[in-house]
Figure 1 (cartoon, one colour):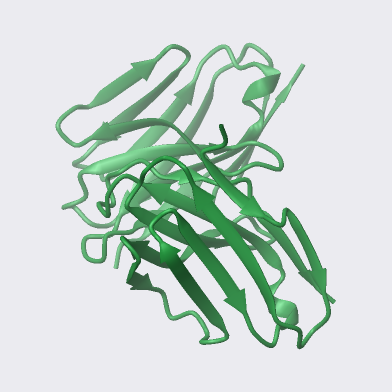
Figure 2 (tube, rainbow over the protein chains, first blue to last red; figure 1 turned 135 degrees about the vertical axis):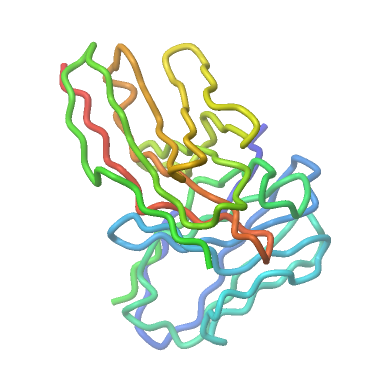
Length: 114
Length: 112
């Protein structure tokens, strides 16, 4: 009965590779997010989708491409991985697109780029 | 844009003591103030929030207080227990763009 799930939990890869992280929510929410948490625990939003439509894109390099096949899924594809991409990536969802809505976070994907 | 400052960055308390974490924000129009708790290896989880029409809200051992004039809000945890050890984040909505701006986080360690 997991609310927001992400796969994989850990991802170790070489510089220059392309990788994807998948996210699914079974809460029936309309809005989904991707956050990046760096080694100092700073949490920064990357993207937000509402009903499959991109509504937030926080000046993330275009090597990062989110894709939402339906409102329950938001995947993150990263091309040409760089050392600085190493971080924990969190998917989250909320009922609507309001910033006052409670956000439900997934367990995170720890990406390590060697 | 919205600026959120959170202090302290780390806090160690003895089990049973109280812990207070404070956040200061810049946009006087902000009207929603949540606190999220992140346990080791997990995603953040909302633990309490407050809207700008009240000054304090309590839920068992945790409370949030809001001072709109001074533009700061605080998380209070009483009778701390080892399971309270976690990273705590405050957040404030950005006025435009429908997003939350998170503070830098506070690592709380409760020593037993």
